[in-house]
Length: 156
Ligand SMILES: [Zn+2]
Image (cartoon, rainbow, N blue to C red; front, side, top):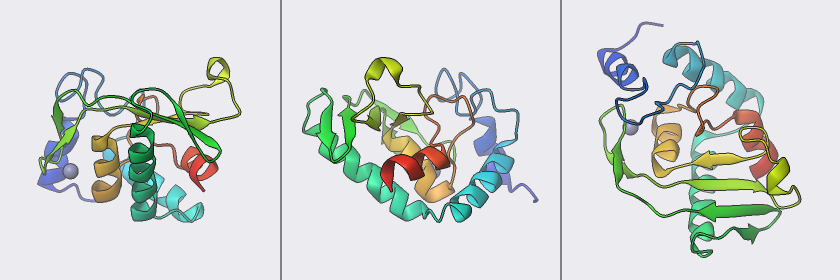
């Protein structure tokens, strides 16, 4: 796959310290275009749709806001929506998004035994935008990675 100049610029902004301290790639040693390609295959295999998943994550965020920072139960999930603190630009330079953090985990697993990325999804407005528009779930090991298998297990 030939990398477009826009993608090349975006990928350069994903390394730690450019947009966020941690960056967007975690400890994944794959290139961002490879991550996008492989997660696209997982989405297909799991019969997930980028728009449907993004809608669901936004809906959970809004329902979680009723908890005013405390976790609230939504169906079989616990959702906690933190305050937005400032804005972050998308690496693709197509907008600014609230720097918030929403966590979603199964209501029947105690927080102490929740493993981030295995039982718990954490995302921001920017994460959902990158998922919806750029089909980018972020690298493995990124705290905000939207792991396709976990999305499937928790949300559908
Ligand atoms: Zn964007």
